[in-house]
Image (tube, rainbow, N blue to C red; front, side, top):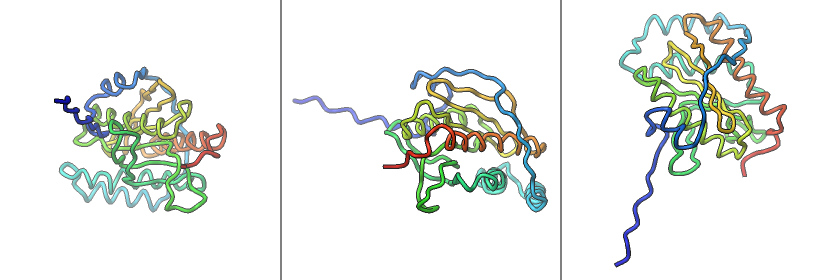
Length: 221
């Protein structure tokens, strides 16, 4: 009798439990350093008022969706305003490279397509919620998503950025080739100016990847 074939092991992004699993699976080296150059950006009064209202009025402890909908996405959306001419912010857009790297990141920052907002172009950044405040699993999932983007784009020298947040605490990392760099500083929603300065820097770096390093001419097949 012929040998039965074993089914392929499907590893969605949230199947990775620790960052070490991703580092080992894809031979990535991890270091920590200060790389974010905080770049100040004005914050609209209307946004401040809305955020303060949400923080004051809503309970987040038992609702992961509330964290995404009332804190994480509004912050990303507000920071994105200054970069919307060249970049596009996507919410819960599924991506897949293979059976080991597939799933739906919470948020993706990608190249804005000249064909319209409905067309998904090359991604540069993923942001995810640290569900149940689990940053260990959050970074495992985020790094797996960053690896997938690197492979989907077929540009190992392109820097891919990642953000993991529980709404209150925000952490940043970047992947280039086989080196993952995690920013040693964390940012908080209570220090809104510094948080926005960090996000603005990262969004600006995504635009530099698009504008200065030649990725602009590469689009989906």
